[in-house]
Image 1 (spheres, rainbow, N blue to C red):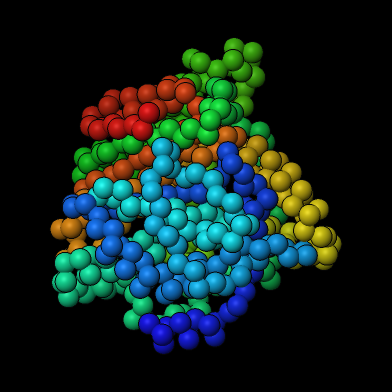
Image 2: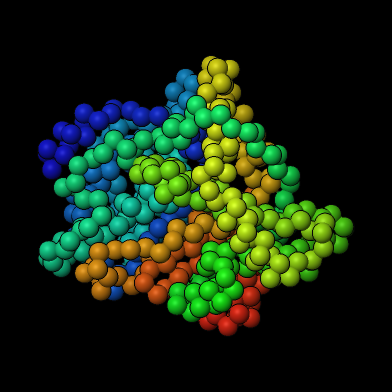
Length: 432
């Protein structure tokens, strides 16, 4: 353990935020907390003392997460610390705000009954990065609790050497690539219900058999993700037509769902900081009402066409160019902070109706599976979009968490009804 600490000390004392992270300190507040959650549900209740021991053992192996967020003259940056997160009690609602500049770590560990939850923010990493940490924490916890000599396979443990690529800002690899400009986006339709007043974050948790939904999607010739995204677009279309004031006023806007894509496989990069980008399948309501088959066909072919390295590169280049411009570099942070907020409103949220983030099917070492029931992923709350959806699978359980900051129930109802129409059984739980 002391040897690991010595190695970590020699890595860095401070580090820049990666390209995707730079905007998040400016747009984080008590409502839009930008904290998301990944969890593991175990077959037995969590032993708090063993979890605490495990956390002290594992966390220093992730030094790029063991940092404070600081304000510089021109940019935000991370400062290295030796602090270990304290285990926190579960609160009424997940993904609560944190004073990010108050020498607080940007990782929260929250045990509750048989669940271990880890919350973090895109200031630090993306879903893949924090899930990698949770898998390491879970694997080592099971080892300490049950005393089994597991094969940890590809799980990161303190015995594995720290690779510099783990904390690389992978976006910088593409700063010199020449590519076409990206098209401008237009304002998209959003759910127009009133937001909750007390920072209440409601979660609708759906559990589905992966085998069952796979049979349906294979017959349709699409992926599970295509089906989920198309179901959400169809739910928004039904809400737009049946419940929205805008439709009645003949104001027709596109329905656009952003779908984050893990870029690591596309570009052969293994960073544990942010390295994802968004695709945005949509339907144009000026063209009339779409059937579900038409929406599904749109989504499937859009994802096939645009989820490729060459079609994603222009968007990566755009973000890096804006960071590298001399005028941007020399603007003081307090001015840049204001500009970033305006930029997010114009580019980040205006052209978006909602999002569906799919982390995928989680694999753990075979001998550990008997101790694990499922994994969970809850996206961060958004008072701009109202609804966000997180998807994750383990063995035969697909978990879809629809997070919302309003009391409207129509979106999730329409979404679930589409699964039932396609003979897919859904178990539903809520936290409200």
